[in-house]
Length: 539
Image 1 (cartoon, rainbow, N blue to C red):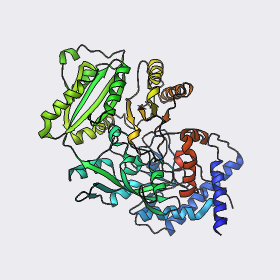
Image 2: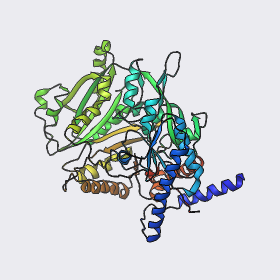
Image 3: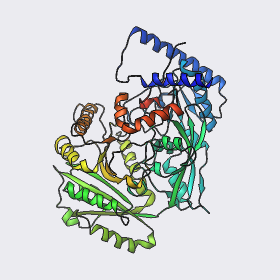
Image 4: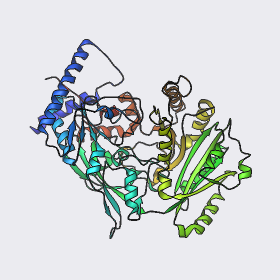
């Protein structure tokens, strides 16, 4: 019986891997099959609502919000949304779908705070699991006293901003963050979670002690580096393909009270990258290191004056950024108020070793919360102007250190020459300090740069801020990477064909497929990533 079951699963996996996502063939037969599947899904949803004993609820009305995400480019309606109040709600749902076998095309996707870019958390006529509902029904548990490794035990549906506020009540905080904190724990851990602290602590996926995961068969599994380690490393950066993370134990450290937040400018890209690389290689450095590319920005330093103090206002007034591409180093030093004088001396020493334009030194002193939640302030301003809920055709790349100058010459010298449609982040990290057993895909070199083009498109525009123009620009950047053989990798990746996914994963592809076969053999989970397609048969 076991051999027969294994044979059936292997055949199904072969069907899953044999799907071609790059072709959209439409015929009367496929239309009939689609209609049959649609009707079958609604019959299945009806049976779900009748048979599942849930602590939460399964809703088939008002599901349109689950077909929307931050990217604002894809809108795929589910058949239902699950609002779980317990892990067993999620387990029961997935197990029921799994028990239906290949005769059902029903899929399940976990949705956090809705910040996916290209429909990754959507499920066509499937079930979307509202993870924030789970987060609101589960408490955070801080383990600090008597712990050699303090941590918080938290629902995967909790927001990082809430962990920050709760942790500060105990004088503790996570070590590694993302730039935007209004994201769920499960969402960032399924990708990586990279920010300016990653050079020191690694991404968020490197700061997890334990996970609770619901696999694609509905099994609830607790996993660590020592227990069920294959699943533990698989789901971290695993793009939701092997299970839904429902709970996590996150590493903590004593939280600072204040932050010295500093910005300086460079005209020379070589000096800019040399200083960034020197800072991330030092054990006695800043606590946060990032950078920006600024293209043809009018009144740049004047805009900073509202939030930062300029060391030399007279010289700064003579600095002009119009028509130029300049590079901003953004750094931060954490401290306690009683250590202000010592901190200032340390900063002065660190800055003395850098080669920035001295007239562009801007410093601000803010609270730890204000610094970490800085992007949310910008979000609120954009919401007021109606500029937040627009298409966001973001492109995030990991570029090897040895290729970053070729990349910059091509992209900032030939493609993005007169304007950008949003922030461009650029800063190095060193993965030699990371745990590289996770599913996250990075370049082969230890030091590589995150280069993030965080564009916003104007819906009614036909100019350089239109969606079509920005997408064509993104394609030109990707074409340069491929033609020049820069060995880049996408972060928050998106591909249309399985061949592209194979290329992305490279030598990790076989392990990725094995884990899919092991933990989600029917490809029920996270169909919006478009890596595997659920194999269905009409029996």
